[in-house]
Length: 185
Ligand code: AMP
Image (cartoon, rainbow, N blue to C red; front, side):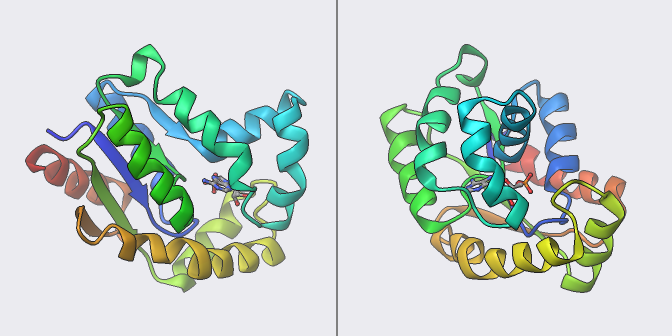
């Protein structure tokens, strides 16, 4: 079973839900940059203060706030035997950084899981979620940011083990499909 997994997919695709479940069953940490940033905002840390306005606007926070953080997190003791990344990389420069970092840390290879969900379904799901940055305006902006900055990451990973999974099913069905894939990868 592959133990270094990256979840790709637009906001609302179910990355968080699926990643948490898979991480728990595989006994590896779930590393969500969105969660790390939300905790930093709640704790009013320097990182949180710098990230808040970008997150509220539906924009990506600058790479400079995240790269060292990811480097440190992947070297924590609980991450040496595997991890699931959720929300990172979010643009091609983060993907390039991660590629180099994993070579450096001797943590290759990786498996990429790309959740595919139609935009109309994403909007309905995000509006139902009622998170702080899930207002109608911010949702639209996050979908544009996804198309412009994050979708190219899928092309970047074409040569890696990239698996596209239909995310427009019940969480249980998606979880089943993912677990079959991951066990074979
Ligand atoms: P998420 O919880 O993954 O939906 O992320 C929520 C918000 O956190 C995003 O809209 C971004 O503002 C910010 N964020 C999370 N991960 C990243 C990342 N890898 N790069 C830049 N911004 C991020």
